[in-house]
Length: 355
Image (tube, rainbow, N blue to C red):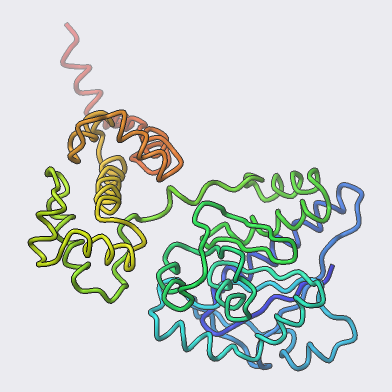
């Protein structure tokens, strides 16, 4: 199976190397199991020049796009890793996508010929630009979601999966391990479950990726342009521990409660009540991460009076319980080791205690 890995200026450099390392590990694992190696790969960029990823370590492509298209055998799989940093602003993201227009017809042609297209994180923007995600939710790092919603407002995002397989399109979420999980998915799809298990063990990672929900920051949503909603967000955050009255909030902002709901849904895809819930969940997460306060007391500390109701809400949003979240992100619970006494001090102490 021939894989083409697309390179672009300001791409996620360690992710490119992670894909190649995982492909090597997969081939090695299959050879050791008596199978033939599955993958061969090339790196392709718009030009022959080396690209400079976000880490500054240049990568020289094997081929320019024009050179690659002249080869006798074409790729079975095109992989589009993150094509710009998740923290990019709207103007930078738009400029990056505009500069990549030459690859768009290649994507469309590959799709029409039933080839496999794979996006990782902001690689989904290229599939959206090619018109291939109209009926398929995109996946990406949660930091890139506001940009995607502004650039492609008609399209949907799947925030619950790490890998989504749509047949000849596979979307994967971003993050440090997304590249390895992608390769494991391809191994399982084309070489079978046991080959994927063997590769996962060689890489020392779980075969089944975790839910992305616990990794999200609930309040990372200030990139919208509605100043009134931004003001409402600040007020909700300042008074999140109080009994929040949204009619009073709307009156304070000089609009109706109905208008407040409509503008929240347009800017944030949630209601003011749902935003308040996110604020309280984020506060609970902060306490679970940094304090030893029992989870039952955290519920009341953030303004909830019904513990069981909040626990259900927490698990619904993050896919994990409060206790599991603390084990994942909280302070390590191991005791500090006892200090080793100075030998001289110990000897002196012993002498003084003797009769």
